[in-house]
Length: 131
Image 1: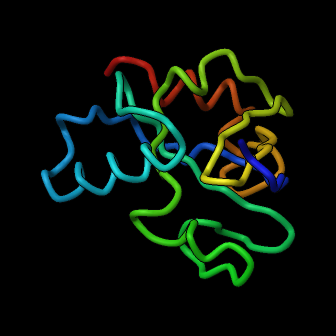
Image 2: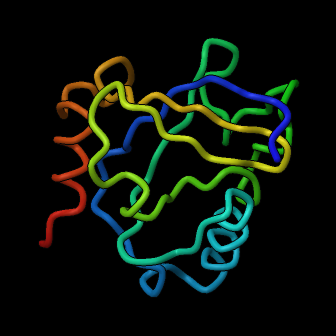
């Protein structure tokens, strides 16, 4: 049961979706481990995301003194299954659990990088569309 709540935002990186099988074997290991950290499995389409807060502008790629376990390819997942993001609209909240931490993430496409691509739901639709 989480004992610590961390507030942040999440936005979609506007790259086309990937499936687990499309990833190189070495990347599959990292993706699997990072998804397991938040209780998820790599089902269906995987969508690239970015986590951010006033305290750290990239939870996964910058060492965040207060939460170093989020850092790197075995920390937070940068690819989330489409099932986690389906139906989420701009400013909705997504909750993930990472160990004893509850991550309360606001879907905030328009507030950050890649805002020119549209709202959270518009970018989601674009990146999960079949080629």
